[in-house]
Image (cartoon, rainbow over all chains, first blue to last red; front, side):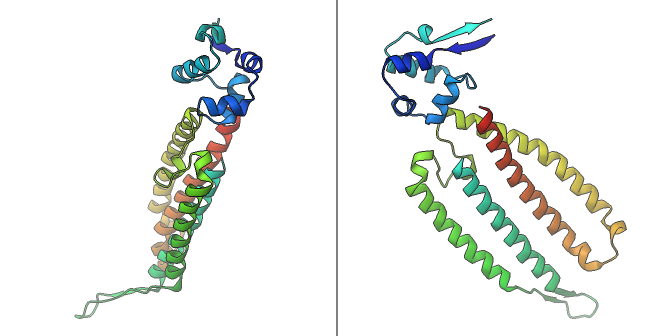
Length: 66
Length: 158
C-alpha cells in the first residue's frame, strides 16, 4: 500500500508556491517538494495542516493506492 | 543540511585536536615506579592550548550560527547535529543515528580486536601507549563522518 497525494495540484490551484505552503504549515520548502514528488509520506498532523491551509478535506489530497 | 556539515566538521576538527593533545601528553609524560620516590611527570603540550582555543572559537561560531543562520534551518546549540527543522529532518536524523549506531558496533568490535593483538603488531612501547588514543580518535571521527554522510544521503533520498 502506498500513500498518494495531490498536493502539487491543489497548491497550484490555490496559487501558492512551495515556499508559501511551507511557511503556512511551518516546514521547509524541501519537505513540500519531497512530499509532492512522493518521496516522503507526511505525518497525520502535517497532512491535516496541509488540508486545512488548502481548505480541503484530507481525503481529497491524500489517498491510499493498493 | 548546512547545519549538519558545519556541526560535524567542527566536531571532527575538535576531536582530532583533542586526540592529538592527549597523544602528546601520553608520549611526553613519564612515570617512574622503580625507586622509592614515586615520580609522575605529566607533560602538557602547546596542542592543548590550540584545542582550548579551537573549542572556544567553535563555541562562539555555534552560537553565532544558531542566532543568525540557524533560525531558518532549525539549528540549535543544545541539539547540535541532532537539530531538525521539521518532521522530515527529524526522520533523517533518526535514520542517520541508526546507521551510525550500527557502524559503530562493528568498528568498536574491530578496535577491541586490534587492541588485543596490539602486542603482536608492534614492539614499540610508545605505539602501544598511543594505540588506544589513536583507535578512539579514529572511531570518533569515523562516527561523526558516517553520521554526516548518512544525513546527506537520506536528505537526498527523502
